[in-house]
Length: 137
Image 1: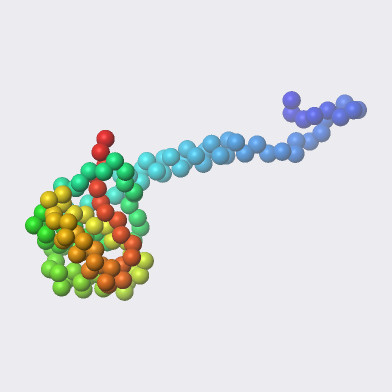
Image 2: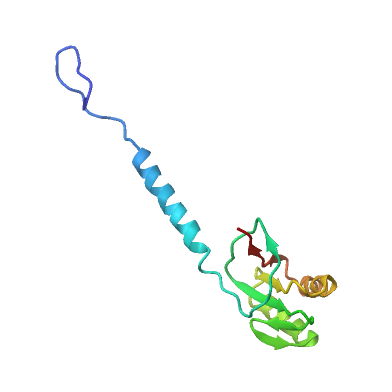
């Protein structure tokens, strides 16, 4: 029935809009975006990441700090010493105060080294952190 009939038998115009199809399309687009976002994130060096059942996706405006099993630092795939790391962190904050730091530490890296690296970043003004992990099946 396209419209309701009045007492005289003439049809009244449709006044309501059905938004259900639009909501369905938006949900499909949201699911596609969420699935494809997992394929965008890439790593700078090969490290044996610890596994976690839950993890967040990547973020925009990020810098990657990798820590190998021996405790050596890599800033966006470039090997750096601790003083150089402090300089890189300071430059990144000056460039973008809202920068996100992704810490990608090898499973064999000592916990103290990872905490020290995050402390250095916090001392330079970085407040947004993410720890990179591999998701388990």
